[in-house]
Image (cartoon, rainbow, N blue to C red):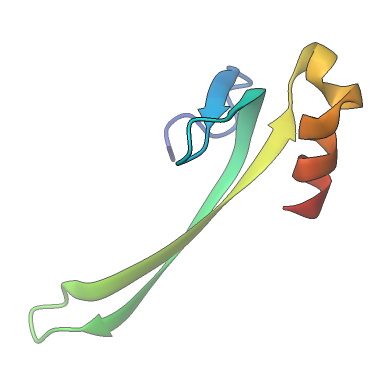
Length: 69
C-alpha cells in the first residue's frame, strides 16, 4: 500500500462482508511499530490509510463513508 499511496490510481474497495464501496485512491499510509524484540523486529505493527473518493463516487454513499473515515 505504501508504494500505491499518492499515485492517484483508483482501486475498488470491498469490505469483509462483500459490499463494494466503489473506487478510492490511497493518499497516505502511516505505520507504528510497537513491542520490539531484542533484534529490533516489531511484535505489533499498527497502520492507518488515508483514502480519497475517485470520480463519480464523490457524491454518493461512499463519499459519506469516506468523510467518516
